[in-house]
Amino acid sequence: MRIALALLTATGLSSTGCVWLAIGGAGAAGYEIAKDDRSISTKFDDASITTAIKTRLLTDERINVLDVNVDTYEGVVTLHGHVETRSDRGRAIEIASGVKGVRSVTSELRVLPPSD
Image: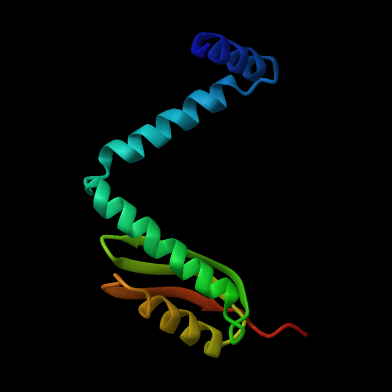
């Protein structure tokens, strides 16, 4: 069954010209996983922190999040992207800091200039 599924997938990818993209993507993901020296437990904790922050950012009524990415490595959170106001930037940092397991927060958020 696995062989049939693999062949079917490979056939579909090759017929659309995506086989090299699939192979390259898998290789890149494998490289990222191999060079990451965190334990499984730490990776899980980091993923949980990231998910909690993203959920809180999206559901908080006091912040307008346009484009915020969250990265977590060993409890250290980095916020990337854009917000509309300085207040939104501060609120995003406050939200991230309030999540259990967060050791520190670095903000690389940029406030967008007001539109005309």
